[in-house]
Length: 586
Image (tube, rainbow, N blue to C red; front, side, top):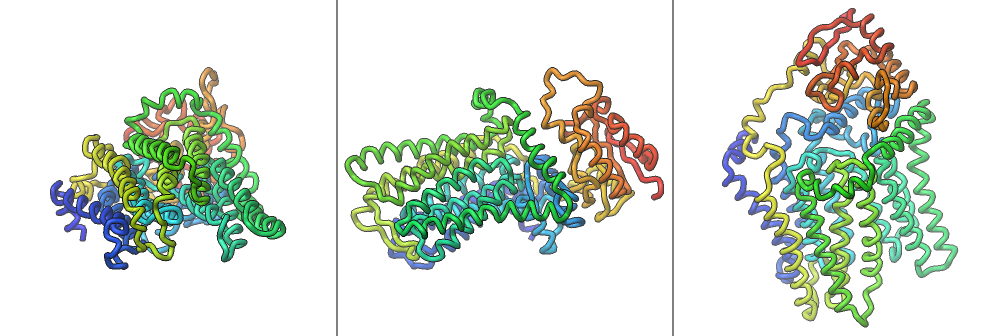
């Protein structure tokens, strides 16, 4: 199999032809219910279309699986966390994940539980699978409000971005994949609440549970979760049934919303990790949000972020243009006509959610592209809501159970026009920019070379003294040493990471460790003594991520740590300024 993939990758024509064929097949399946309503039902099924979308994602993304380095420092960080959770599954005792919580990190254990190695390749495969699941939920939501073809082309607009992007922030398993999926599921359930007849109370409870889990996947998604929660209560209170029933369903929603926080808080209490949970997740995240570049400064510099956004700006512009066009058509065509209540509900919901999503991406005040995954589906969803509402009076929407139903003859022209506009603005613009923009990650055409890339020198030196499955003590922010060696984290926190949460401008201190609270210093040292790793690495060196000045950040700047290392470890070697210490009894 690998030989065939290398052969395919070696020729741009072979690989490009396959990509084009798969994309055209997905597009044809998307248009089929509109342009060929009498074609076989199996070809028009939703399962076949989503299988084509999954194949589209795989064909465009498989080469990145072989890239031997992290695509973003967070990627190796997540691998180090899952390696550690496999050793000790108690969250906050074994790991903290910065801005991510347990609902974001525990899913990273799935590949290992299924018997796959925990490495970059499996992490990226999982990211792609989560992307496909996100697209599936988005399509299922759209299908409730528009003809199958319009819903499919809207889904292809999001899939085109996610398949064609070469920015590592959008192709690795980031901290946004799980919260985005949870937000999509919550939105799907919320939009079912106004008119669901079967299991309405269960739907309300499940929506509440998912919404309650979002802050413990990523605290950054809390405002979006609160917004969707508000809509859930409004939808339930406006149901056409008695007030006792409405209030009862609101009670189920509230109960569901409290379930996930209760599980997290309860597990922290049972395992004795309440203080660590508060200090490392709540307090640290609030400090992180407050210590970034100002939101006004980020907004002011948005035009300069284009090189970092890897075609997301093009997607955003395309969807905003589509949504604006849909709104104008709605004002023109809908003048004096009533919009179907379901489409009106979706339009209001998406119009409120989009600015909240943009705020969510910008609020931390840091120009990290992967934050904009929070905006991907809200911006596509807003464009879809506006366009579907504009033609809702002219297009017969088939029942969910009949995706292959053909549109009424009177609806053919507006549906065809809407599809043509989406193809030109939503898909063609993205595709054209893909071929004219530089590639950010050099993977295509290089798979045969990437297969021969050896493990890093530092990781090889570490494995000369330790074996996968043992602990690795690390000072600095170079989690790739965990990912490349299979060694788990000796400490739940990296004390230096707290410096991300501190405004250092104009601060005068003799050592930056003075800015790290005693709690995190004591915790780091206690964890290190408890795990007693065979190898300790001071990764503060030129070329290291963020912390690269030994005089300012080396392990000697933490006196208690220096005393422990100098007493129990000896210097085994130094590679490019990175010092490797071996425990003296090894």
